Image (cartoon, rainbow, N blue to C red; front, side, top):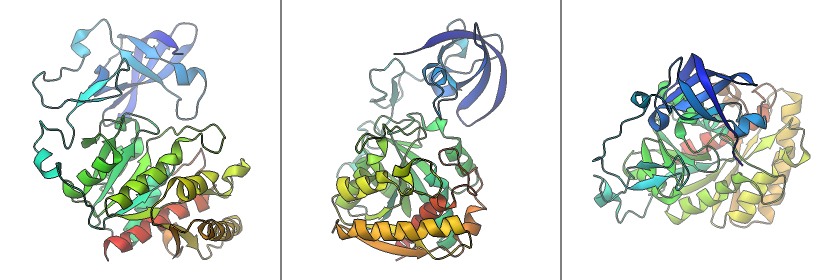
Length: 370
């Protein structure tokens, strides 16, 4: 079911690369915030009539707090004007009304096809997988405590948002020089490079971008049903399978929480337990933050997680636990150039969550330098 609305653009708010944020007057609802992706629908301006998809907004979903502009029907001059002769035949968001055609990193029409045609090895490049998009800046903070000069690429899977432009986090990390490039895999689109699968995305990051390490995370807007298997974060285990098959170093970043009100996510989240112990089938290192921060709730959570991972590894012989001392990580997280937020909680509310991701990044950086 799709909720359609139409409205009139009344103003523009600060946006970010690739995204225009608009105020749109909608009859019987008032003014709503709406996103317009420049490359998809063009650039609406005040006075334009716009067609909106308000499905997520109507249901008050977490990252769905926006309407999305589907078309600017009355002003063709606003529409994007792609070159009909441009190379590329990969269709993303396939057979949806907003399917888009892109040039794949290994597309036969592209310049890199010959290089990637038989590519089959990551040459030991570390690959960090995480469940939530909010882990990305924390992983990078950890990386920078060990190798601030490391060239890090982000592989965005299609478990969450499909347009890479939706992630303001990525735009701001790029602007700060913390992130070298993004590769969009599967149905996700809009990265610096486009890939059909996570496997080809990892190979593109290594062979074309020269990444020292890669972080694989779904886009914002993860999906879950509260069941054992019904959550988009299973991709984390699948991503590490791909890394291992291609000769990379598989590094598992844990989803943990000291303050999530849902028992299944307190301490070690069941998402990480399922993705890494059940979905992941190849050898991988599972990183556990250890030590003391002087924050009682955080330290209790870290102690709990250490015991839970010990039990998890005991029943999953393909996993090996790596302990990373938290000294210096909290200071690094406080210097992150973007807002840290996971499920609406910031660094002070859920410190353990971000420490776990930072620990994985620090370990991967050490592996990259090995």
